[in-house]
Amino acid sequence: MSDNNTLVRINKYLSEVGVCSRREADRYILQKRITVNGEIAVPGQKVAESDIICIDGREIKKSSKEVFLIFNKPRGLVCTTARKENGKKIKNVVDYINYPERIYPVGRLDKDSEGLLILTNQGEYLNKILKSRYGHEKEYIVELDNAISDVDIKKLENGIHIVDEEKDIDVVTKPCKVARLSDKSINITITQGINRQIRRMCASLGYRVLKLKRVRIINIRLGDLKTGEYRVMSEAEVLELKKRV
Image (cartoon, rainbow, N blue to C red; front, top):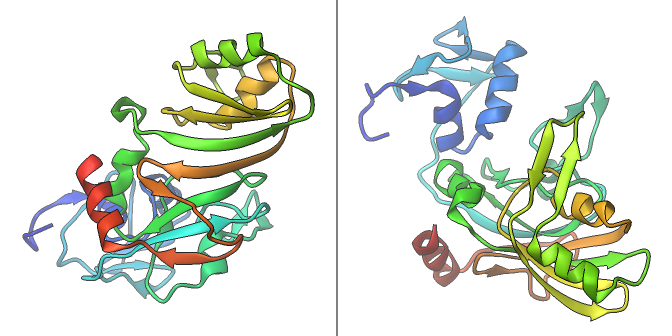
């Protein structure tokens, strides 16, 4: 925000300054963990940059430094800034990395999956990566419990009907790219972000995913980064990513 008096929704503001995603901000508000000028924040509230905004009593200040990290997420870590989920303690990626600047993950990689994750304090801008309408590619290596047939690979490519009443999911996935790596492993590139999409697609055809690893998001590649390690995105990578989104 360029003007201290410009009003924006508080969840949008917290996303812009790299505190958390909009969804997490809404959750914090409902938990009464956020205050604005000493008063408990309410959903939909609008704030200005000049307001004093605190989470758990700690004042939030906008960082002038852009941070873009590439992280090779191990299995077992949760892509959130929260330390509890459903009342239970969890291991989140932000605490694991322990970066000196406030950052949060762009999008999710489920707890049982591993591989490339982007973390940043420029969340509102990179939120475009998550929108399926932009058609940005995300590439994965998938290991299955049984050999996959050429017929089923073609079905994955053409789109799979996914139904999950509990999660309110009833959709046919968009066409995607699938290449065989071995009898039981494939490389798949999707442009959507449905919850556990690849696992659901494979399950619809009778396969169980044993290992799921993301290796690319748009132009950002995991490369030879070791599991559990991160690196700062190069200037060239950041410029190309910004150009594409």
